[in-house]
Image 1 (tube, rainbow, N blue to C red):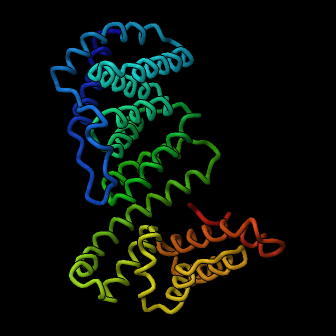
Image 2 (cartoon, rainbow, N blue to C red):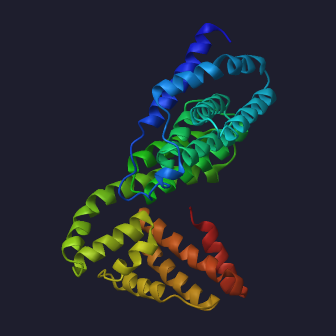
Length: 331
């Protein structure tokens, strides 16, 4: 590895250390991280430099020796194994995992890159979502091997879903952009490309709806019995964000009779397949008369959830219709 390449690699490792060390804290809506006493603090800059000095040249030599894709993939896995077993030296473990993440990203090994960043998030004190988002961003900088792109799309969309749940739409937008570009590199998979493009449209619409819904949530803090605020909150949580668990109790307050009726059925639930299918049918009918866009997609997704819950107890035409409807829904 020549001097310029060596400098570029260590610059990438440096960027990783700085980015992860100064990662933004999770928003108030994000799940809390593991207890601080269960994970190590992120190593100081001095500890990072000492660990890099101990590790550096031997790893660069191994990277120079790995010529073929198979040799590089094997090296990435060895690097991860070393990081995973370095529990007795936190600074060394952090550095090994950071190097592994960057090397895996440069060779397009999505599985190892995600494994490395998950290791960092488990062992050190910073937000796991930020860590996974950083891995997606690193992977997106490089042209990954063709066979790795579907894995990258799924990994990026997983980060998108977690970011939306946490109302971190800046993270979601960056991750979904990687998913869209990676999906374009997957030949003959229009479904994957459609899924990524649809999720990108979802994220933009959810972020807009989130901003518009803030006054309703503030009003609910002042007056939990405000029906109009509850309805607005329900529309955002269910019909934009897709968080039906949190939103159904509010959605029953909307002034749309069909949505209100379906929401009440949903809240009541059903003990058997035919009953669950009736809930699914109610939502499907609402979705069919909803204009094309995010709300329609979320309603159809909710219907698909209920059809799936009913599937084992349906037969004949009812089962076939449910399967066809579920298959038509873009998740």
